[in-house]
Length: 396
Image (cartoon, rainbow, N blue to C red; front, side, top):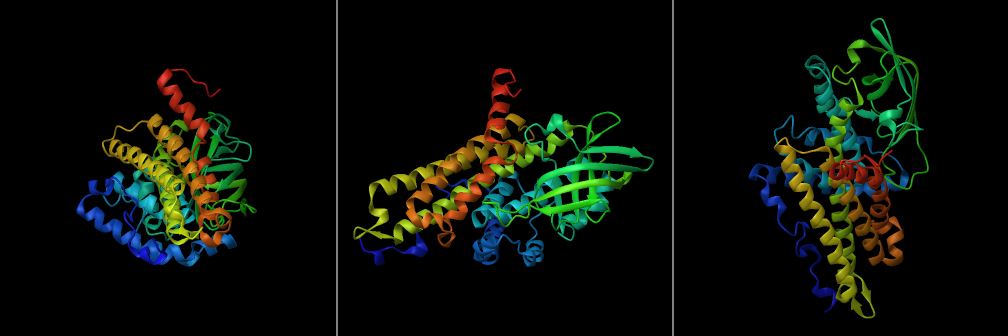
């Protein structure tokens, strides 16, 4: 078989949806997904590697994201969770950093307001949030608190008349270097409960510093945040965020989004590895003609399909209102483990070219490490699931 015999623009199963899960969508949802994919192909994909190399966020992309109207597809626009998940996978397939930006703004930040704010607060804040006129961030993780932040939140809140005084620090806060608002979780000194606050980043005492020297999701502007006697009016205390259990209402849903990112990252690895295999000549033959290379491509595809199948079913359970925390935990643990294997196989298929971003696979490989770790590490999500099936907690 010669190189010329391969039609690179019309490879079989171009969408990677080997079992046709997208056929579960309504016709309207399929059309909308196609529209979004076209946008991602034209506006995101061409700039992704350059932004990642420079570690800079493309601020001029935000108005375009606002125009395509991606925020809150389920609650605001009435689409299914299956559709929302496939959109998030598609965004990750184009660029994990831009998908993470949307995951922070839409899933964590917007989700916190939708789930934990009063109706009056939602009416005041959500219009600008939905339209991306106001960019949000989510402040939970701390310099000394990651997986244990539920019982170890060190940032404090003290009621002072009609205001709250916030002091403390947060770390790994995506979007925070340029966001307008940050939802900050702090421990109320009066009752020792974790509560949520919408903090204007322009308030005196608030500072955000970009975290440098990352090897993953370099386009995402993660920040260290410090809060020094930041005065927050009582109206900006989220009405229904009064314990860490309330915070978990948001995290259960956002774990689904990260698991969908693991699907999208595997699709991206499959795209790059397969294309390379049908273009690259070795020993006078196409790389794709070797049995072991085909086996590796099929393993990537199998990992992707199994991850997608799990996520489609979980999204259906979410649509039915019966999804459980432990099901989200298992999905996040399982799909990210399969993703790690898939991107490693993809990087190996490219050989030395797999460690330079010129061929994109190096970026895909590196970005997978952040997805593997955030929204609950693999170990913690495994133990959450283990607790559910044994009735015994092994976390502490």
